[in-house]
Amino acid sequence: MRAFDHAARATKGAREYQEDSSAFWPPSDRAPSDVPPTGTNTRLVAVLADGMGGHTAGALASRMVCDSFVSTYAGLNGNRGERLLKALSCANDSLAAQVEANPVLAGMGTTLVAAVFGDEGVEWVSVGDSPLLLFRRGEIALLNEDHSLAPELDRMAELGRITVEQAKADPRRHMLRSAVTGEDLDLVDVSRRPLALEPGDYVILASDGLQTLEHSEIERIVAAYAEDGAEAVANALIRAVEAMRDPHQDNTTVLAVRPLSVPV
Image (cartoon, rainbow, N blue to C red; front, side):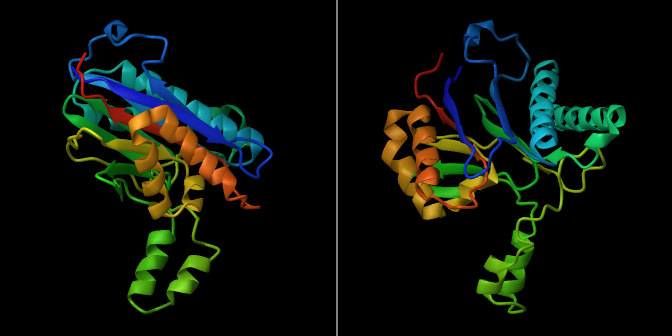
């Protein structure tokens, strides 16, 4: 069975509080041999949520969604795609129950991107604008859909309806078309089949604060630290975000995962 090297790092950026949450399953203090058999060869689950709704509500939403997603997925058997969607649904329901119990939290929500890794590769589900990136042979590719208004604005620029500059500067660019809020999920991106991973690949889950860096810079950083492992890659990406010194820098969280060539 394949093993995966993984690490997570985060920064508050210019914010006074942290609304991002993330988790791996199984936890790092559990050896692969301790993982209960699931019948689907899942070796690792990685999940990241970028909360919204203010300090308390956003942080609560992201933490609840991460915890609910991981615990639900870990308790299910069967097809990974179905488990991903069921875990997402349960995480969404957990927010609905929290808001019903405490109406002052109405309006809280979070993005979610989750990836499961096994011998066949990686599968994922996502809601919102937290990117899932694949680094392969020196290049970065976006695996999941962006549920913000950014793709729509970029499409308008391609059609000549607005300029590229207008698309990039539009204050609505980061508005979400879908998020986990406890209500119906408007848009969900789920992989159709496992994406096989190659030696040297990295899968990066991130909150949208990573978009302070250009794709070319992300490529350069991952390539430079790839041989040093997931922890070095995650650290380097967060250091690069902090070095930009953007006065409006959002919270940024990075989860880096790479397949190891030696099976376990």
